Amino acid sequence: MRADVTRYTNIRARIANESNPTVLSMQGFEGKDLHRIILYGDHYPAIEREDIALVASGRWTGSRFKVVEVRYSSVLPGRQRAHTQLVAERLRYAHENVDIEPAPADYDPPVTVGLAFTLGTITTTYVSAGDPISVWDIIQIDSERMLVVKVTPSSNTFTLGRGYQGTTIATHASGAPILKV
Image (tube, rainbow, N blue to C red; front, side, top):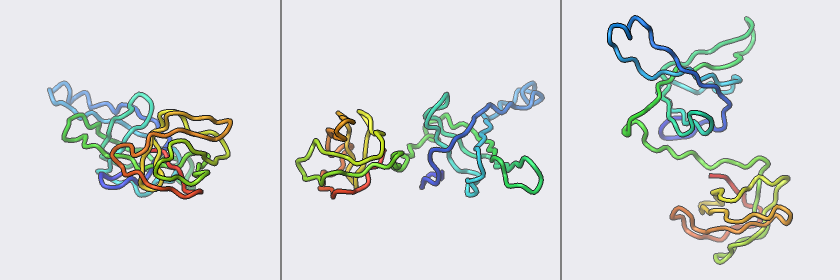
């Protein structure tokens, strides 16, 4: 993603250290903290140099990487790319790690508001083919963020802390999408 907009989320990837040339290390040059990031599939054609990757899970959770190089690979000649390989520098200093808040994402399976909200509603229903909402999830409906404090999957009800993160408490229509922040 660029610093100003999220372009891809929930990408399956593998991250490995990229070693610095031994000759440079022996001469006292400090190499950058480089890593290879393998993105599986060929669905990411817009990734470019200077993009920032924010890791959401695994060993590097919370780390930010700046893309230095993009390499495309293929398994057999004439076939589509099997994966995209990025060479990225891990950003370690405060000025490099400006917070980039990911955009709210759809639940899987999708979740919508069951009964319309009024300004005083704290317990209500949701509609979903599964039960993806968990206690302590931060959700967003329209422009209001809420903290889920209780979930009862058997009745598809949940209790919410309204106006979370300084957002304004608002009314919400039945069928409005519920996003995970």
